Amino acid sequence: MDIDDLCKKTKSTKKEAISSLSGFCNMHMWFEKGARAAEKEERIQEWINADKALDKLLEDSIEPRTFCTKCDRLMQLRYKRVEKDYDNSNNDKVIFLLQCPDCEGRKWVYEDGTEREPYKRLCEKCSSEMEHAGEKMTKKMVKTTYKCTKCEHKEVDELDLSEEDPKEKEKELAEFMKDKARYCLDEKGLQEYKEGRDNLKRMEELVKEFKKDDDIRPQLKEIEKLSVASLEKKLKATLRRKGFDKLRTSEPKVDKYITVDVKLRDAKEDREEYQSKQDLKHAVEKTLEKTNWSLMTTGISYRLGVLECSLKGHDSEDQIKELVRSREKKAAKKR
Image (cartoon, rainbow, N blue to C red):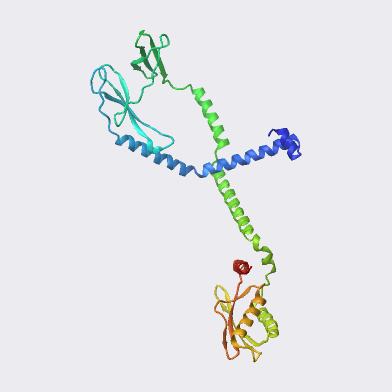
């Protein structure tokens, strides 16, 4: 999507679209810089551990005994290094550069004696294979000579070891510092990023917590939060109509929940024990179904027309949510 398309889609001017796009890019860059800066110490430690593993692999390696195919002399070690497999570090292996002391022929050989197929340098004149013919090293230059095996043509590679021009070095450093200021965070910037990131995480958790209750939000709004006194008054009024009177409540017990023991009398003389307990259970549950109180699972006891039960009060927001969810599950099972 180009700027013109963005202007049409957002119904904004070109200047407004560019400003919005720039703001989005800067915000994305800020998050990217912050995430990398926050992982800096961990990433450095990973690199250190990886380097230590490579050092150990190199240190523990055993030089293979290899003989020159031309002179039949035991070849000598010139150099060894780790050949990395960037897809799987378990496949990293050490390779040795061996050289014949007589003809100076060279081979790259792995620890198990397997030779690596050498790079074939071809002659510019006759396209025949060239061979290494010697090397000269000074403080400022390394010259490596290659000789054609057919036409005797020679080619020289030069590696410049002289110090970099101070002006170029200064220019490169200035560019580096400019890029560092743009793409990296200092300690203050990192702290600001961490605070912003943590605030966003907290906001995300709050949104998740809020959405988690979407399914029971209508039921939560209907909950009537009753005090112990209001509970007693409501029960007396309802249960009297169902044929229960003389209701008394115990001193509330305060723990994780508020619990109250209720004792009352069945005013219907001809009602039997089972029916009396069932009628009381249904009446209490119906009375409390949209309140913050519930009938405890200890059940209802009956002796000579005197009934007792215990009620549990849900005080905190989490307790009330738990109560509503429990009621919803029971209702779903009955459907």
